[in-house]
Length: 298
Image 1 (cartoon, rainbow, N blue to C red):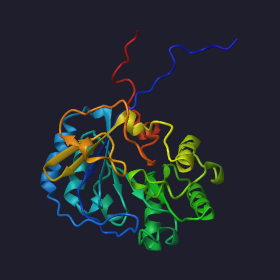
Image 2: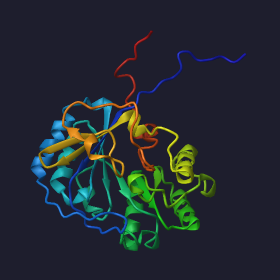
Image 3: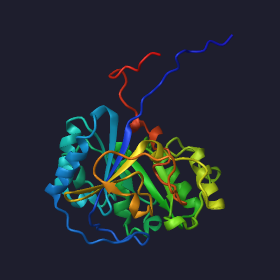
Image 4: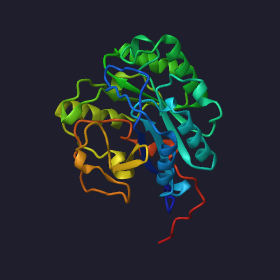
């Protein structure tokens, strides 16, 4: 007779809050728009603190990024490091072009790097040299940093060589592929099947690719992503903060609102987008510490 554990083991997950800072970029990726923006770093840091003040440290993970490149703004990184040293869980998304300098003195931050493969050929659309790509991969392996890759024209052989390279080096982070953007509900142009990939523990689960395949084939979503169940976005432009449930690709402007309480929805105008938020709550970084806040017995 099988013994069933009761109550079953539970784990709390943190709330996910994505902060996107209006900023400039030092790359000219062909699949991304280019912005020339001046950033008031002290005002932006004040805005970050206003957002942090809404939460308790144990209950939230922040991803802070720029719609350009956040490492162009060292005062913002230093401020985030200070908050992380105080106990806030903060990950930073970067294109990796300021490595290794951007890491210096910022040991409490967690990192996510954008890179489209392990070769300069796979990163032609990003304009990265092989030396830059190598630096990103070296850092990701060393720090167990997460990697997110835009899938566009890379061959399956190239993708699998990328996976094999990381496996051979003992990579313990997460590698997340997402398709080239499809704005305003337009059809996805690329598809990537889990069955075609070499197995690796650092890949997204098969269900992620099944959802991707379904959207590619039907133009419709048949599942709810973790951003809608457990996420929210803050858009920061110096001292101005706007909020939106999800800003994936082309969210209608009327769904943005001023800084204040979050707004939940019983549906959301999802198009054909599928990205890193899909299985966000299952990431190890999202697990809340055990034993600090006891669950009620009922």
